[in-house]
Amino acid sequence: MGAIRLERCIAAMVALLFTFVLAVPFAPTSGAAPAKVTVIASSEVVPVWEHAAQLFREKTGADVEIVSQGYNESFQKIVTSQVAGSHAYDIAKVDTIWLAQFAKSGFLVPLGPYLSKAFVADTIPASLQQMQYDGQIWALDGAFNAKFFYYNKRLLRQAGIAQPPRTWEELIQQTKVLQMKGLARYGIAWGWTQAEGLVCDYTLLLNDFGGRYQDAAGHWTLNSGAAVRALAFMRDSLTSLKISDPSSITLDDRGVVNLLIQGQIPYLVSWGFAWAWAQDPSRSKVVNDVGIGLIPGSTSAHTLSSSTGGGSGYGILRTSLHKDLAAQLLLIYASPEVQKWEMTALKFDQITSLQVLRDPAVVRSDPEMVGFANQFRYVYPRPILPWYSQWSSVMQLQLHRALVGEATPQQALDEAQRQIEQLATRVK
Image 1 (cartoon, rainbow, N blue to C red):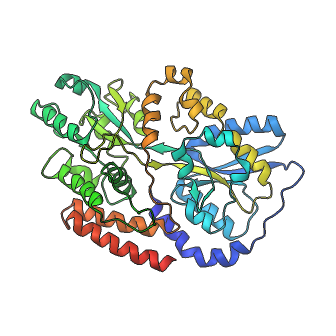
Image 2 (image 1 turned 45 degrees about the horizontal axis):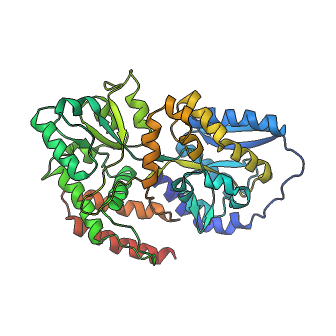
Image 3 (image 1 turned 180 degrees about the horizontal axis):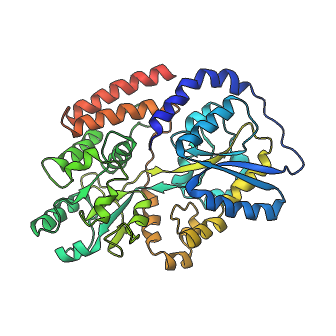
């Protein structure tokens, strides 16, 4: 989640990008198979790219080079290569919060011409949605993720609770039972330090409480009644309700998972990696005790559930000399065949294919996929903006001010509304 600093690097380069990068002409796709297609990939998915590359070589005879490094280095390599007009790379990682700026700056080519109707129909809609900007798809999700609801089955059984909460109101009631019986000091913990993870949790709660960031006309509604109620619930969960661990305001969305896997809290809202951590006996005390359910809905807002998306995708760089061949490799990487392989061979759960999610063999081998698949129906995205870094910085600060008592939820969101409206006017 260290994208705020990185996104500012994009903002600083905008003038240069539009004077230099956009001047680089599209290079025609070579008719002959090139020696290789080069991919800038995240280190954690290199095995998937290697498998896709093997299938690609068998199909085309062309080779693949995979360039892998950390998150920050990937960002810098992509921006630098595009500013220079380099033809060295064909496919690049595109984090969801980079996408709008990359597209606007001319780094990527639209993928619509390469995508069949069958492919689009088989892809989780929320996955495609977060890879769209200005009406076009610019990347394919290579690591689609969402927030999920985890619960400690053993603690619930000991408390006499038959099923996990379906609403936040039920979670409050169940937490009181767990506290009264001495089974847990707090019901849930969050990664609410002043960082991107705070914005992610607020996004899903905003939607859960019936709110939106913008209305149908595109006007910002950051201080609407539903928005204030969502933030008030977050604050109250820490203070008057005492269901959320107070350390939440200092934890990030990685550190908070340790409270679940050490058996200290019965409930957690977290990304897909929390499941793998919970099942790892070298780090977890709750192996086989964790279940996956829908994130609770809100009785007052009549919602069933809500989540938000994350992760990253892969797009074809505008300066690639081998766009058609790169598209073939990208579609192999995103294919149900490769996704099923990564699930069975690597136990990766970040899947975008509906076909794979519904595959009986997959469900039998990974029953938790049912819980993951159900949650994908309730994903509400963060705004897709070229100036997302500035937007997120404002939201992080104002949300955190409300949580630590420096402002009321209404005051914090009024200030967020004022600043975001000013930003929106300046960036037009």
